[in-house]
Image (cartoon, rainbow, N blue to C red):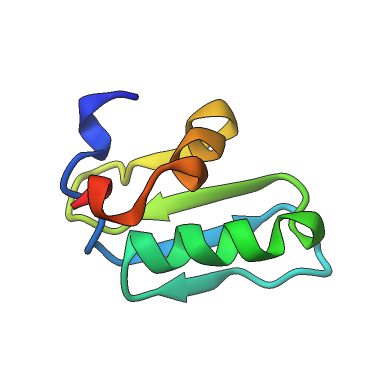
Length: 78
């Protein structure tokens, strides 16, 4: 897991789904966004998570990295 993910646990994040049927949702923390992804993964085809941490461009978490983060314990992100 890249070090760039460390410290993002409390940063606001948006879960974006490339399906027109599923609207994007913004959460108050990356932890909450990951929990949402994990709970709803069957209904979320082609998702990405945008981390709103002040970096330009914003970090985007997707694919294998997103899958690995959903498996990690919450406190390991903070």
